[in-house]
Structure formats: structure tokens, C-alpha cells
Amino acid sequence: MPFKEKAPGVKASKAEHKKHAERFLANEDHKDPKKVNKPEYVDMTDEAKD
Amino acid sequence: MTYRPTFRKQGDGSRCQWTNCGCASQAMASQRGRRGVDPGNSHGWPPTPPEVRNYIGACGGTSLGQGDAASNHLYATDMAVRYGVPWATFQSLIISGRGAILQIRYSVIAPTKYDASPGFTGNHAVYVNERRASDGALLVYDPLADHRRAGIPQGPQWWPASLVKAAAYAYPGTATGCINASFTRDTE
Image 1 (cartoon, chains in turn purple, green):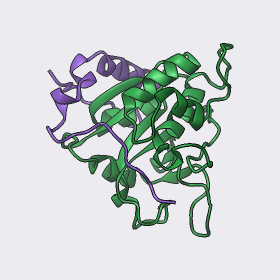
Image 2: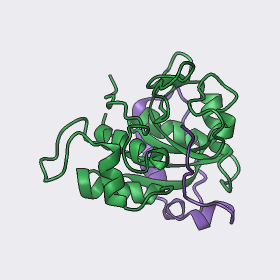
Image 3: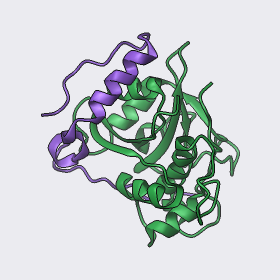
């Protein structure tokens, strides 16, 4: 299941942000783009111009 | 104070330079992940885009996962590659003490003063180091921002969060309201 927990507000303590971060990073679905992104997603950058 | 890595430009004359946005972003992220401390292995230090590229191999675009593999092998620091990250959670991870390589669509940056590659509108990678509490701006290390000509920005720039968000949302195929990024370890 994609992560649904609401993030702390930007003024919340760093400790709260760290807890939220750890819970999010533990979610397996967000390690797989096929589970959370649209089918056309491609994990690849393009060539820039000089 | 948040550790700030050395800015690395992709246009350094090395092999594959104009497809090295991911390599340059990874070099900066790896330096952040180690807070500038040399792992003391047989590879170079500090991290550089060509070394990351040489590990990845042939020229061409790169993925977040390729950068992560290079970072582990060359610099002994792991990245957390995550897709479909809600914007508020992305900001939370930055505030918590992590840097991030962020995938963006450059067409959103092109019309702004932050454009560092006139005419380029494609998929790009930048490194985000920190958030400024006073206005919410994000310190973005765009590997293209090397001031190689007049009008091209130089080095890290504070981009409005709204611009970063819009450019990340515009990356093709990204889940609505989300971004794709690779996070350093928590260094704070």
C-alpha cells in the first residue's frame, strides 16, 4: 500500500520529521516505480544542451 | 549548520558531459552522505562526475538506481531511492537532515532566471541540499549552472519551493502530487 501518513508541518520539530522520514522509507511500495507511478514513467535523464 | 558539498558541474569537458546530470548530482549527494569524510578505499575522493560515469559505463541518461549503485561501490554511502514521494514528505525528509537527488522536467525551469541550459526542456537531475526556513526556498545544485556564458547561473541557487515542486511534478509519468528522488543518509 502506498504511504498515506500526513507529513508534519514544516514548523514541526526535527524529531517529528525524522520519525516521519523513517516510516516513509520503510514502505516497500515506494521502492518500485511500477507500484506508485504511471505506466509511462521512465527512470532516465536526457541529454542537456551546451 | 547543514553540511554543504562541493558544487560539481556536468560540463567539465569529460566523457558524456552533457548526459552527466545524474552523475554530477550523485557526486554531490555522496559527498553530503559522508559529510565530506573520505571512506579511505581505493577510489577517488572527493566524488566527481567522471568517476561516477566511469562506474556506470556507456554514455547516455542515467537512473537513480545507477547513481545509488555507484555511490555504494565508489564512496561507501547508500542512497534511498524512492518513487511517488508526496511533496510534503519530500520536504519532511529534507528538513529531517537528508539531501536528495531530484528528477525534474527542465521545461519548467527554462522560462525562469534559473535556466542553465537554454533550449533544453527534457528530463534532468538536480541535487537538493537543504530548505531555508525563512521562506521555504530550497538550495538546489543544478549541475548545468556553471556560468559558462553570461546569463547562466553559477553554482547552488535558492529556488522557490513552488518552482522545484512544479518541475518535479512535471517529470513524465510521475504520480499526481508526487516526486521521484534518491535520498542521502540522515547527516544531522
